[in-house]
Length: 290
Image 1 (tube, helix red, strand yellow):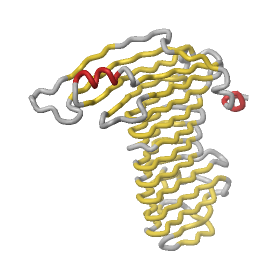
Image 2 (cartoon, one colour):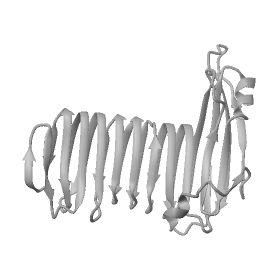
Image 3 (cartoon, helix red, strand yellow):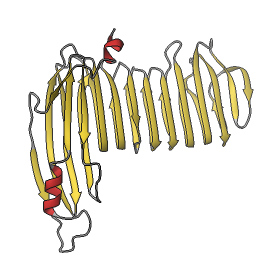
Image 4 (cartoon, one colour):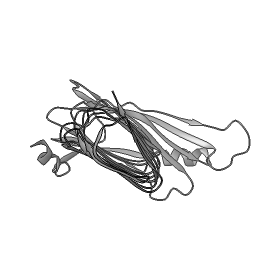
């Protein structure tokens, strides 16, 4: 039922601009020398929000430039959202005035919380940045849409859907389904214990994962490297194929194996799950772990 309610996430919502707690500090930082080139001035503003978690189970975030860190916490009664807004410009007055145009909109419904960064559609050479730190209940579902910047997600046990054009995505200690898409950047998986679906255009996928029964690990890289390990006890139908590059599999007991330089297929354990690794200009390195 939670997943059905999540589809109505934005149908009934209350826009919260001032949350239960809201703290702001701002400052203007001037350059130390007399030469003022483009974006020599920086205006910053801190923010802090707290929102009740009662009867909610989902969190959505849209950010344009900056970084996002989300941590799941058990038995949390208040969602905490804090960080810094920043505008870089070529004059003090311009940086300060445009800081007021860089806003954080928070929509709260009966079932979830949505956070959205808004800024002018044309930057005209300015840099607008928002850095987020977020603490949510460990069992909430989340979706992140981050255009440019790093995304780190820790300790969640429910579904994670993340779509972003990012420098780097790090996912650590997850017991949740993970879906990630990155255009320019890398993906780091550490102790992921649920199904994974990840696609990267330019970048690498590295780390370790353990599939649940009937779980899936579907990874694709256009330009880069896939370097991932699975426990030796993994059960899955296994396929690793690249167009330009090489496939190397070690430390895993493949049954009915078909092994070539650019493709390796076979069965791990009883074959209940699925591991599907694909590349174009990609080397694929797969290893077994204890």
